[in-house]
Image (cartoon, rainbow, N blue to C red):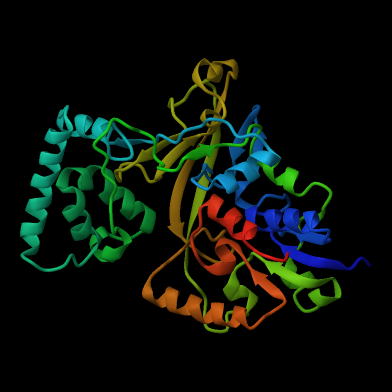
Length: 374
């Protein structure tokens, strides 16, 4: 049986980037994944000639040139710019909050008019607090953007995301809400953004080329007790509490589920991402996948389209964990698990699950690029 320098558990961005760097350093890795495919949450499924983001929309964005140059050295990225639209009871608003949004909301046409309207509504919210600090998310948001934006674009959407009323959510969840006094629908402030041409599988396959991989493998059943027979070091990107047998208790997660369908039309909603911000719809958003890689009239060259409704739910055993719940209890618990992890010199805990921290894609890759002596 082969012996490896690294056993890498999970073939998402952290695991794949680590395996790639290890190979460049002349090290041998075995990459295993419990799913029947490689790529973790960035895996794409090809349906009707469209790369469908099976585990939710993944839009790569970064201001770090080193990270951007690295991913583009594996596969060229396209020019996709994330410009989501919000649908509130049939009316459409541009996101993030910018001059287009304020025109749609109030009919204002200048930054001075928009700012005056926002300041007027913020003043009403601050007056209602009568000098005290905001006690919950609702009060916090009202002091940042005022009543109209909060009620149409934040309140019900946030309640669907968290499964709780805004008055029951802590204020710190919304520390700031970016307001742009320009006509700019680009959601991200980062210098670089895009999608791999041909989909994310091209990125993962490129990083794992020539590296031994095994899918549909349960680390806990096959390797947990004897992984040292297989490799000198372990890179673990699964859930940190599960690795330590839930010694201090289970960490909480939010998760999402998707209802994906083929529509017999070339263009269903005209945009990759449309958020549904009222309780009228149970889903938080609809993703139309072809708009990530097909632009302008190119969308009509493909006669059908694939859309996914996204539902935010409380995590239960057997579901995919997506978002850490960063409240006091979970942050404290996660810190205890991280202390245990530090006592394992031959194990690297990486990624969102392994560190119980929410990361976008680029910071995960940046973390691995910054590791010395792989």
